[in-house]
Length: 292
Ligand SMILES: Cc1cc2nc3c(=O)[nH]c(=O)nc-3n(C[C@H](O)[C@H](O)[C@H](O)COP(=O)(O)OP(=O)(O)OC[C@H]3O[C@@H](n4cnc5c(N)ncnc54)[C@H](O)[C@@H]3O)c2cc1C
Ligand code: FES
Image (cartoon, rainbow, N blue to C red; front, side):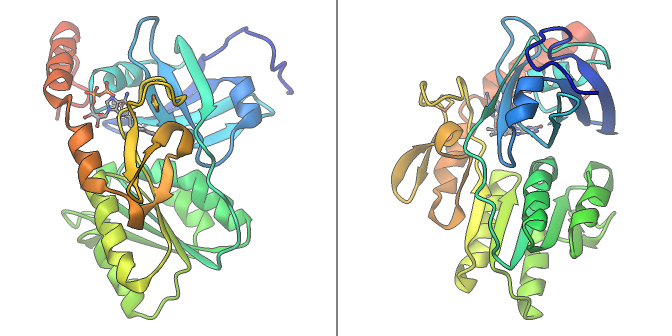
């Protein structure tokens, strides 16, 4: 059924919720104006309730026909824990977007997607778009352990080859995504571009691994974002020695030019406050999600 994109009825309602792992949930949300404009690489900013924190999350999928967008959220702090406690039929107070600059999708030849943890969800729409543009896609998926490995089947459906690594060897091979990259290079695989999304240290080492091979490599940066529109400067990152705003200039940037050490320092700045806020929320709600 075609939806009236100008209707406010049911706006931001969760029409489907699926728990993908103990800490990661998929939410399909009614947001027709966003669904009509979304492209691979876009993100949205969600608020659980009025006055709530503004949380950036990547658009994993969208359907202009049903007016829905899909996001995958990992509960790591107070707001994401609160969001993943939502049930089907609950509503976010607002969803702003689509935000950011979409990834330029073109024919490279062979594109390797390297995703870590919830970054695999963020990688999926980009890898899918490259596949649809006629590229051969090789996916390297990394997780700490088997139960945190998500979207393996979806990635398989768009990839020529999927290599899985886990820190503890409970799925795929024991090791890091960079071990799988080194194997591909050693086997003489010709890789024309790499797109990586995941924890900052992982993306830094993906860039260091591809640098000697001169493979163009792009990383989706995840600094703390506030307004998401280039106004506050909160998401400043250093790329090629210049200050860039991840929310409008990115979030995808040339990984070989990115100052990952500075990004790590900046994202850690509020860690103490974030921990206090989560502890207080967990105490008030006797919530066990995300505290394992
Ligand atoms: C462009 C972009 C896309 C993202 N896509 C996804 C996604 O698809 N799925 C997903 O689970 N997560 C995604 N994230 C990360 C997600 O925004 C953070 O996990 C979330 O904001 C944490 O909020 P919290 O209150 O639960 O945790 P907190 O306890 O407040 O923070 C925990 C950590 O999350 C990060 N963080 C906190 N606040 C923000 C903020 N306003 N903006 C960015 N990072 C923040 C910091 O590294 C912080 O140390 C994305 C981030 C960015 C910038
Ligand atoms: S989030 Fe404010 S400038 Fe990017």
